[in-house]
Image: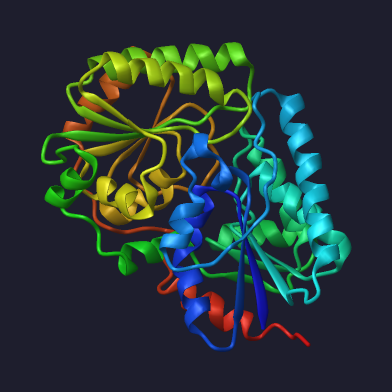
Length: 369
């Protein structure tokens, strides 16, 4: 079975990785990885290199990463990416028998939109999730309507996919793929992390990521100024990973870059990669920001997540999640209250065993020529 896996960023590639390894090893499958989006952007770390270092030989499609982060430029990038994929499938001498996509990004929406006319069946991972305060919600739901096969992370999400797609066929609740990384990867120890990145994780450390909310530039600037005020005062070493390419990301990026220059206790990284990111999460005191990793992976590493603002509100979460308004003093008070919290177990509502193997089994039931 020929399977094409679409990856547009460091985030979805890290989630896919356990599945990609198994697809490559299984002689039943002929794997093609199509890398586009920020993978090919020097500004965003040229993460195509990571894919190649992991032993894969991806096809690269140089889609548009908008220079400006306003809605108009993102809409233009969507249209150009759609055309790019439409042309790619037209030029293929041997089409895949399934295209796999993941998540909720506008780049992925554009790629699948450009795949529809080819008639290639589409599988969607992570459908049915609910983040009403993020534009990702609309892109995710659109991907669900375009796909014929669905791999969801909880039963609630499976039920929502059934409601969106208006049928119960080919919807499999298999858990969250990225959690396989925690079993597959040999996470770095404190010494190895220091040798690679120059940060001593034996010191109390916060892992921080903050993406724009789907609101105005003015509100996002207000948010990051409040957050930076708190970050300056927190008695922790802070590791910052940069925001993704959403509308209004540049104001957040600019303020964080300035903060990192001014504060010796704050370290900034464009992209740590899957291994280093989860290694940092393992050794940190807690996770702060609005990344879904605080909700999905942090529980399995027994880490609390202070969830800032509204971007993730509505997503199913475990007992490790503490919601907090974006206000400097409230952030500081919430971090102090963490000392009163009991230690977490590794219970995780997104864990369903070996997710990669379960996906492999389901893929083998899909009819193909």
